[in-house]
Image (cartoon, rainbow, N blue to C red; front, side, top):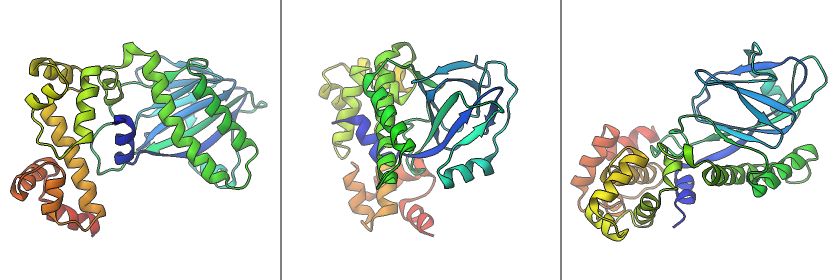
Amino acid sequence: MDVLAEVLRVSGARGALGVVVKAGGLWGQWLDSYPGAALHVVSRGTMWLHVTGDKPLEIRAGDAVLVSPGTAHGMAGGPGVTMGTCDREAAVRAIDRGSALRLGSAPATTEVITLHYEQDPEVSTPVLSSLARPMHVAAGENAQLGRTVELLTAELARPGFGATAAVNSIVDLLLVQFVRAWLDRHPEERSGSWLGAMRDPVVRDALACVHARPEHPWTTESLAAATRVSRATLSRHFRSALGQTPGAYVEQWRMDLASLRLRDTEEPVESIAGAVGYGSPHAFSRAFRRARGMPPGEYRSRLRA
């Protein structure tokens, strides 16, 4: 079970090309909070990333940085530049025309490709939203990621037949490759997030069991047995990596799956209950109300209304 691929699929974490920035001289812009995650890839020159409360971070050519959803941040040509507000209308026009957003008064020396990633709002598993700080992968840390960035840059520079489909596929691939590269190179930053939990073999093996068989009547004891560790060890690793118990995670994932089925299918509530591991519709309804604040039938009606 490829847990990362499964969660990205279920959560609907899909990317879209934002704006290509070409900047030179003295430049900077502040981006208000955005509901999705933002991946900034520097294809030429240098950019400084500013996040309130953190030191400015230098992002060089070939580097990429992922900013978690809802994080206001700034892009600038230096660490002490006063940044203006992003001109959203100009950015939208640039995207519609397939042109670059130009910043600064001098000839462009820096180029930044901005990508946006959104998650299905009905899925609560925090794949990207739990990141405490920007994730930075420097040039040369992962050759595969570098080649994909080069492919995206080339596709944007000389778009041909099927360019939109090609760019969308590359954007989705970049997210997976970026996460892989970050997990491989930044062990000190792994804890405290869903992505970081993937590097804990105890948690990763347990999540693989849950995601492969969400309908199984998992308990902390049975999950510990399946991963060949003690109950205490499993609970300790879950608390350290995810800040919750194994049982809480199992219920959270089941509610995510159930929410999508209620919204996207005509399956009876009874069938959905069994598919996500509940022995009776009553038990499922009680758990669903606890997680979503309303019974399954009302939830389905509200979404469709």
